[in-house]
Length: 290
Image 1 (cartoon, rainbow, N blue to C red):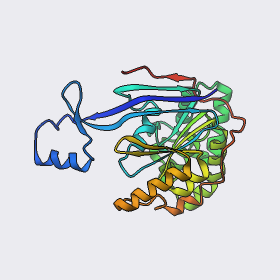
Image 2: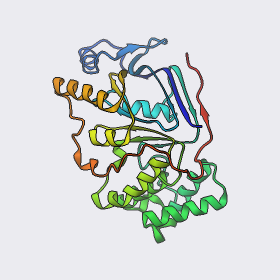
Image 3: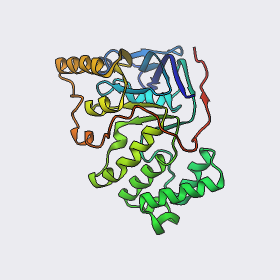
């Protein structure tokens, strides 16, 4: 059974040229909410996450909300293994897929077919499964004769279609998704909506970062409000969103529903996991860094 555990997770980003005292550094520290500090090696660091803890089990749909720079994408990337905690532990049980950037992991010098094959091999798929993956991605992305040409020769629209089709082709048990993954022209997103909803339904656990209230209330059963890298509140969507919106309005921050054009693509409530396809990855356990 899939699960995600974050125990007192902290993430720092070193500023290798930020050791000198200056007005610029002082202004940067003020703008970042006082998140500039020093690590054990006396390096100046930006504290991306601070003491973040939560547990997710099968059926959980977690929404991450917060202003720009609050730590939402940093947390998603840490859960995906892109960033390593300087303190604490991330434990992910089950296959995982991270929809953070449609172009993530693609090599522009390889052909479309080669990129698809590499993704299948990384996911542990056999030859027959990779052939099915190639057919699925080619048909959805309308690549046809471009399948055997380098990706760098594709138009920007073809690259977006290939990246989306490839990223959503393998159904994981744990799905991480940034709202910017939903970006695209209206015609393409209308075509992609059913595919994306099927992927979300099939996942046992969803972690979604979004500014859009309608998306969060429709897709999530639980919400964490992040601010300056810390958890401000963790609870039911209506309650946490109400507190977050009130605080945002009081401080003049961006509204949670500032991009309503994406809300129409959010789909219906996706609370119950459906039977899932072949897993993308084996279970992952990233070590204790305390």
